[in-house]
Image (spheres, each protein chain N blue to C red):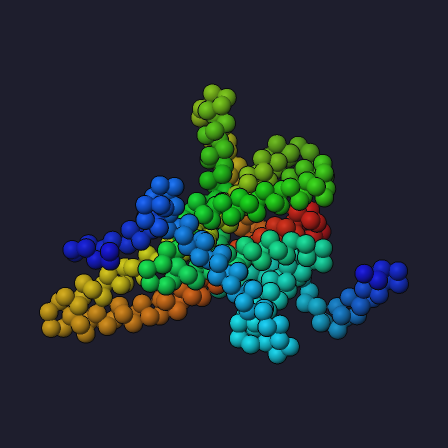
Length: 251
Length: 97
């Protein structure tokens, strides 16, 4: 799949195909869906198996489960405030889903479902609907005051209101594009340098030595991608928290 | 919880005095790094522009006013993009006012 002939084929890794043989094909169950199910199962396994011992001095898995819980709990209370705790399950699910999706995508033969705008936009749209519904439920009509700051001169309203509405509507777009673009860019780079390894290795006697260069870069890139995978999940979660803060407090 | 004697409030004030609670972050808790900040700003501008342009096109198709609403919404989208970037760098304490 990597190097076919002399061309670099960096995008075929994002192609969707059906998984699970003829059964999956008949219901259009793609490998993207399969990886989402795997991620959900992994998170469930981590949480239920890791917390089974309930030891006072946690083991490795229990520490991992507790650390992720504490991490998101801290983020939610710090960003939204005390009343933000009721959004903890949502933010936690979102964070773990994106994080595990990013991380699972780094394994060989795995598919990164977060590299598809359809998947990330679905998540971002969910956040968008939630923040709008929460703001409407908590503040009612006052929510629409969000689009026109108090104290601004009234004759500016025809400019400010559309700009604010566009700015508000751009939230799910930027949220989804950020995650998807980072994942696509990282995986394309990995694939391009991996193709260089194969191509340079075929350059006669010096080839194998030359191909050490892209190999080194790829090793560094994988480390970098682990960082990006975590960071993007973190950014996704914290921006959700910031938007929820805006929805709960309206500025 | 124990609202009757304002314990939570006094505790929070004491914690804030001692600097135990971090003051609400000026960087909004987002990770820094010049590359990351630049990318985020670009994404903000792009997405606002995208929303503006798409909204303009749809409104034009609905009302049959091509190309005027598209042009207006293009400008609105750019303005919203700049507003997003401004909000990105504005400390959150300022926003609260």
